[in-house]
Length: 277
Ligand SMILES: [Zn+2]
Ligand SMILES: [Zn+2]
Image 1: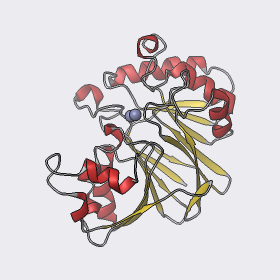
Image 2: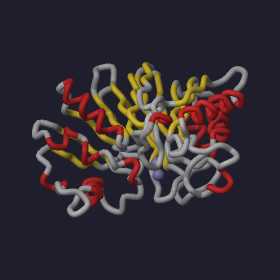
Image 3: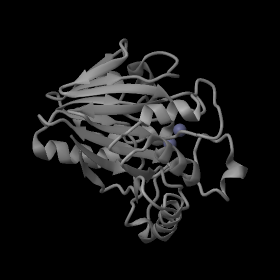
């Protein structure tokens, strides 16, 4: 499978030369199966560039999952060009905490006067699906999920194909139990032996105490999780809105210090990162 990140910024998109390397777009992840079927997780502002790329490739068919629907994870959706293409077919799965179904929620995001085009008038085929079994299948990708520890609930995902695994846990506070959330050990079990784990590392350990309960982790806890789960590669993501490229480099350097010795390889995810598993 191939995993590509289109947005690695947390909370709000940012711009400016100081953010150029890791990028300012918010969360959007693309996974392709070995048969080149497409699974997308989250519609942060990164999904705009993904939409342009898919149109160029003539790809109009995909499955879209959401970790949760805080603004930074749905903000790009109105600018995802496939929505306006009558030949596009998008299968949507919701997540815990929607207070209704996913199409109903997205129709609130895209409704006048917040946005001029009402969701109901989009010409593409948008199919809202319910997650009923323990896992879903997208071509050869098997996807399971776990509840996030985050305000207003959410889901993290594990994607597997031919013995390879990718885990995506963003907006997950490991050191604080939020309603519906799981324990550190349950997250470690969910991540067990993953080839790639991308995890929210919004804070440094120094910043964290004043922001406890906001729904995000510091890199020290994330390093402990990656170690406990014996993942092969850890990618830090959901970079804080104030974190310049140099700041992300520093977070990565310090996280690698915590992980010193045998154990996970660590990197900081950018909105251009690609992984082949
Ligand atoms: Zn977020
Ligand atoms: Zn959130």
